[in-house]
Length: 176
View 1: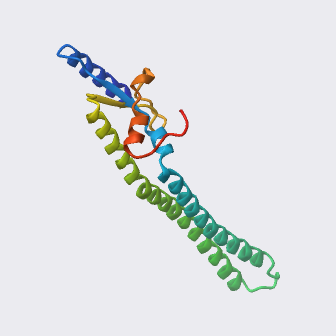
View 2 (view 1 turned 90 degrees about the vertical axis):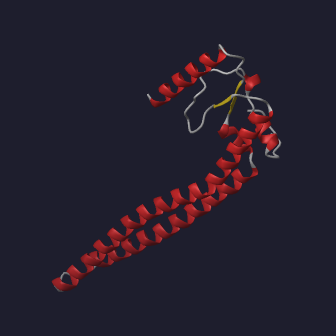
View 3 (view 1 turned 45 degrees about the vertical axis):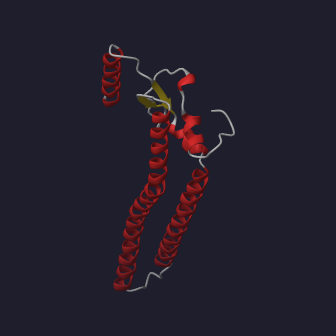
């Protein structure tokens, strides 16, 4: 609903402006631009490494839990109830610790993702602005950011993605 409203406002604005003069519009595929940047591979690698590290820590916690669970289950029937309760309380603390770690790990991954991606998206945004100004575009729409298309149809001759890459010093090696 929000996207439809934004699209309608943009269309009405462009329609009203065409009565006063020629409006120059282009679009850029931010995901495509991002995929061609050398930093993209480094960011992906860094995120994967961070995730692997967190998964290793989580596995160690699970292994500890499983070991202590097996130890509890293998206690002889003659084990005093106080010792059994102590072992069960320890397992419950470990289980809570695992749940807290999972939440913390998700937050850590999101913070890492944001810290790595924000500067790149700022760089791409600045590149789009520069190319738009250099080429006299009044509007630059986006195609396909995060799975949300703002452009329902566009003539490929208005795609400035490769110009943005060129402005950022990156040569696109393959076509989209």
